[in-house]
Image 1 (tube, rainbow, N blue to C red):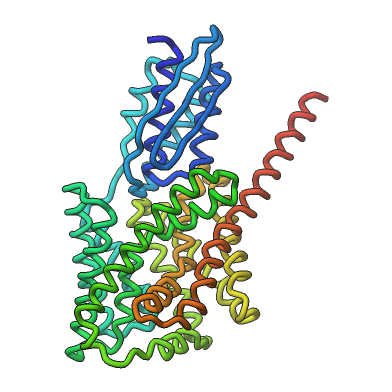
Image 2 (cartoon, rainbow, N blue to C red):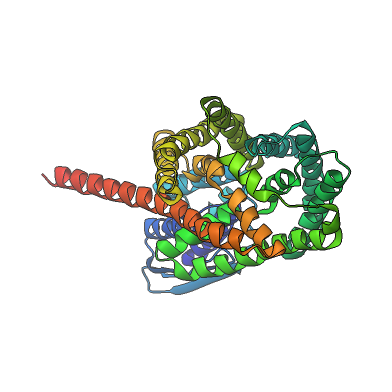
Length: 422
């Protein structure tokens, strides 16, 4: 094998593993370009998607090489992503013998949580989210029951490699059926809460934000492909809810969803403090789900707390401008993660993904889905545009922060270069 073959084989496998663990495409492209340049390669071309890696380059002797491979579905593992990021910096700075690169990659081991801790993370996160949606003790119990079922169904579907679309439909059908049946027998007072909360288990919230971000950042091809995939997954979640309602809708009775929406909109000082604490817990729970280890988990949870504080403050000042305060809250989440990434020399997504949990619009998703299922055009027309604007707002907040940080770093680099020249 030529020297360039070893380098591109390493870059291909590193890029694939980073994407699977949750890295952004632009970050992966940048890593590949820097690694190739560190080893003297030029004419580096990256055409990477979340589903496929494609890399080409030339060496000093103008030998050309190309590598491509398929990428498995994403399974967010931010601890492993952190270690892959450390490996990237090590290789870029020390440029070890190219024949040893693959061995270095295989030596990367992540301390994955056992399944029971992962399940505990889900249970904690779902309980906090259910309480955010005003769940009582009975609703909390059924939400946790559904969470356990969803967890093991997810494990089973991964083992037999069941299509995500089929999995989402079956899971949402089962969750919605259980919620409606317990509502019908009078055990719970509100099945909306159970369905909204359990939908967070299935809704590809991070992917929604990332695909909008890719489109806004100029990575349109990847953004459009991810958007289509996300829409298909969301449609199957809605289809599962619709199927359950079609079978058991006669047991539900009058749907007073507007009263529930009004109750969620009521604010008080005590409620605000409760939401801040619950956001900390929800972000910590999802941090465990993302395999963030204990020493970083507190920082991830603090990010969710900061986002909720900013959100509540702006919501009180600008109650009719959810798009605006979503942008500002997302900007704060991105800024917090960038600062921590700089100080601790870790990937920013390690802190960003848990931080945005309070911003994921699961309530709006349910309102739009309910409007489609029940033929309520008022719900669709009222909350549909807001849902789209919130997703765009989160992405815009990230893009604005990333752009500012990029130019600050560029300015710092140019200033240092000028100082060295003098």
